[in-house]
Amino acid sequence: MSEHEEHTTHSQGFYIGIGVALLILTVTTAGVAFVNLGPFNPVVALLIATIKATLVVLFFMHVKGASEKLTGAVVVSGFFFLAILISLSLADYLTRSWR
Amino acid sequence: MEHEAHNPALLHHFADAQQQKNAASLGMWLFLVTEIMFFGGMFCAYLVYRLAHFNAFAAGSQQLNIWMGAINTAVLIVSSVTVVLAVKAAEAGKRKLLTGYLVVTVLLGMTFLVIKGFEYAEKFEKHHVPGPTFNFTDKFDDNGKQIPVNPKEAELFFSLYFAMTGMHALHMIIGCGLFSTLAVLAWKGHYTPGYFTPVENAGLYWHLVDIIWIYLFPLLYLISRHS
Image 1 (cartoon, rainbow over the protein chains, first blue to last red):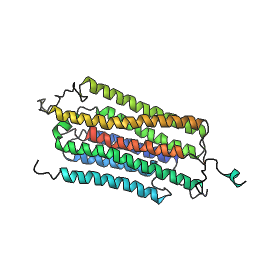
Image 2 (image 1 turned 120 degrees about the vertical axis):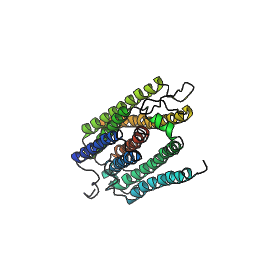
Image 3 (image 1 turned 90 degrees about the vertical axis):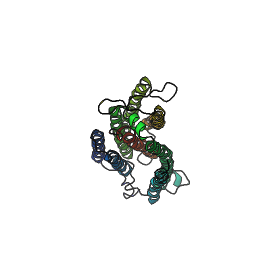
Image 4 (image 1 turned 180 degrees about the vertical axis):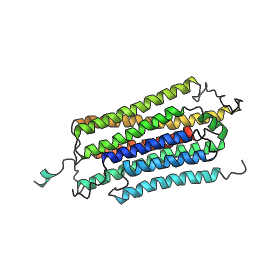
C-alpha cells in the first residue's frame, strides 16, 4: 500500500460541508417552488437537483479521485444511456403533431 | 510461508488488495448503472405522461405534501453524510465509530420510511390511491373556482407516484437491512483498514438511492406548483 492509493477520502469537515451545501440547496429548491417563475420552475428545480446529484456522485461516491479510469467510464456510460432513453423518447412524443 | 503474510480477505485470484477492491467497485458500479436504467424507465414514463396529461398531473402534484417531501430529502442527505463518514471511519480502523455511523444511517433510513408512511396514510384518507375507491375533484384556480380534471388522468399520476416512491421505499428497506448487517459485522470487527469493501459498496448503493430521491422530490412535488 503506497500512500498514492488512499487518496479517495477527504476530511470530516469537508464531508459535513458538502452535506450542509446539499441541505441549503434543498431549502432553496423548496422555497423557489413557491415563487411563480412560469416555465422556469421546472428548469430551476431540475438544475438544482442536478447540482445536488453531481455533488453526491463526485464527492460522496468518490468518482472524483477514483483510481480506476474504467469506473469513470462505466459511470459516464450509465448517464449516457439514460440520456438516450429520455431524449429519444421525448423526440418521439414531442413531435407527434397529429395528436 | 508466503501466504501467512497475506491479508486474509485477499482472494487468491487477485494480484493485490487494491486490484480486488477496484474489481468489486467496478462490479458495484455496473449494478448501479442497471439501477439507473431501471428508475430511468419510470422517470421517462413520468415525463411522457406528464406532457400528455399536463393539467391532471399538475393537479395531482399539488395534492402532495411538500413539507414531508422536503424533510425526507434532508433526512436522506444527512444519512448520506453519515454513510460517507462511516467509510472514513472504516478506513481509519475506528470500529466503534464505524458501528455508530452505520446504526445512525439505519435510524435515518427508518425515519424516512416512517415519514413516507404518514404520507401514504394521507393518500388513503383522501382517496388518492389508484383503485376502485379513487376519487379526485380537488383542482381549484386562484379564485377558488373548481377546474375540471379527468380523474382517470389524475389516477395515472398517482399510479406513477406510488410506483416510483414505492420502488424507492423498497430500495430504502433493502438498504436498512444491508446497513443493519454491516453494523453487526462492523461491531464484531470484520472490517479493517485493509478490507472494508462491503462498507464502501453498500455506501455507493445508499448514495444512489439518495440521488434517485433528489430527482423524485422536484419532479413529483415541486415543478407543478404553479401550473
